[in-house]
Length: 419
Image (cartoon, helix red, strand yellow):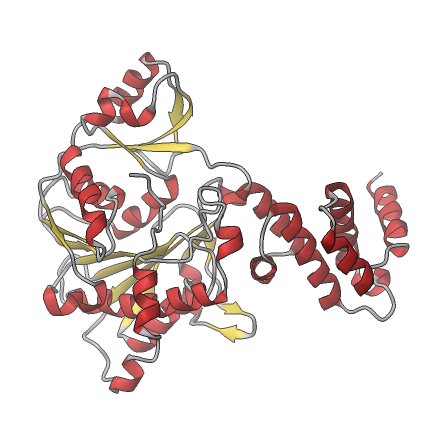
């Protein structure tokens, strides 16, 4: 039966032709015909699967891919640039899966605060209030998925008393990768609204010293509020540009850099991203991240007996903001990538669009909405081996762009957690 279906599809594809420029222009002036667009997407996919035999004479692959990008953009509400970006990351059929996943909200998740309660106790209390839930998965001992609720999850007595935090499942991952130990000195460089900071404090059992920093003073109120509500007592809140942090404080055992990014992993939370983010946004974020990751590395004590660890994470899926940033750090500082310790995830890219990265980037981990049913995320774990490599000042600044642009990116909300 599969063979018959394939044969019918191939015959159908042989009769298919891309619209002419005139037809495409006329089509752009009309309201989108969803059924026609969906059918054309399927036809183009069939042709791309067996391009040599099914293509229209005189039409190359780039023409079909461009048509596919435009049609998918109309169907799902994306600018063509972002669809092309997705097509560089995934096979065409998987791009459709990603877009369909972005059209649906991710499951609501909460993290139980082990400083105040246990998962079973919180689960029992919420179930008694009419909440339908279950544990996230075996990889988390503190997460719960909320399927249905008769009460507002962000206003229960358990929430108000700090027994749990509304937090996306993907944002648990960098904290688990960092593995902070009791009595250590730890920095959360871009901390607001505090989901990761309060998780780190719980993992440290309120011991040691945790510095919770954010460059945006306006976000500190929410950060401090969450720290107090969750019963965190080992944390100092600071308000510095992360890029200058090594000049303010250093000698940390571990640093978490959950870096500002384009947010292309959390499109289901912010649909406006589909029409607003462009190549310039990604370039500005990447430039800022490169400065921040060097600062994070410089803040760590390479001689730490228990740590010397840096975890870099983002809520985006672009290579420019993930592997390219980490590869830059590997070339600029004496660090190495190590296994994240996370039980699942797709290995990072070691090659992308003809560019080769350090082979150890396969130790980093990617997370996707259509594969893992969680926000798009990236996690890399580095260990500092020694102090900074000698660099010329020019090389040190090559990742930076104009200051005017950087200030705009620094204030972007990553929104991988909920206040």
